[in-house]
Image (tube, rainbow, N blue to C red; front, side):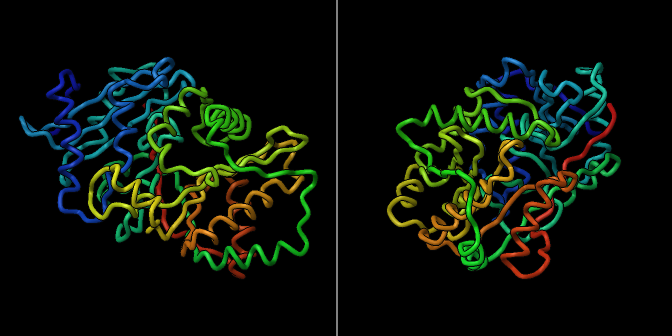
Length: 363
């Protein structure tokens, strides 16, 4: 019989982390490059917990730890209890029922439960739904296929990413260059000397642009600053673009190389990985993570101007592949924008490369 027990000691916390490592032991595809973000949340070290609560649990069979999960409730996303950082061995009985019962005991006044949302979309979301044969890009989840069976009684909210050869990107630039003329839009790169100011702009534009996005909750600048801080030696100025109109920020684009390619085993990024990246970048893929423009400025061509600026950097960096997402299928605006650009670049209707999902149910 599978039961849940709250993490109540440092020993329990060590067992919580070890439960995830046990699931992926011997799996050459899994990466632990974002475990520092998980620890930031699980150990309540984030300013995010000024408006959120978290409890972490061990899944046990007898005295054996067979899995883990955290329950998060964010006052800014009040309807949901989030099941975060779930990991479990195969063959367990009624995992969803055990988790739902604990969520009801702890947060019974909340009507909904969502599995696979790790506090906030910016911290990562989703369980892998296919493409189990490939290592994840940095920022994407990688989970076993049997997790989908554990939550089959919940409603599935699909998400996708699109992957394509970078040469298609370069052809898109050629197609657009002749006719594209932005309307009073200037695109600039991040300025590391004013890193804190640019993070503030990132937070402002996120909140202003994504208010209607599934599972979005508004951020504080301090939350995004501490999220980017561990990766400050990897992120370059070119990876964060800001579109401006009359000197004011109206949109942004965030992209970065697949830092998971710096490691070839299940471990975290280290100093030697950072040095190797800057000395002779071995990464061959990039991820277009976010692009958004303020609603009142969406006819100025700011999105196209930022994409063109990104293409210049991707080509200069000699990258071979680009992947965009994750995108919720129900987010029709983002899906339409992505498909429009990809049809122009590829000359055909693109197919998703990876599929992910979160699971939602009534509490």
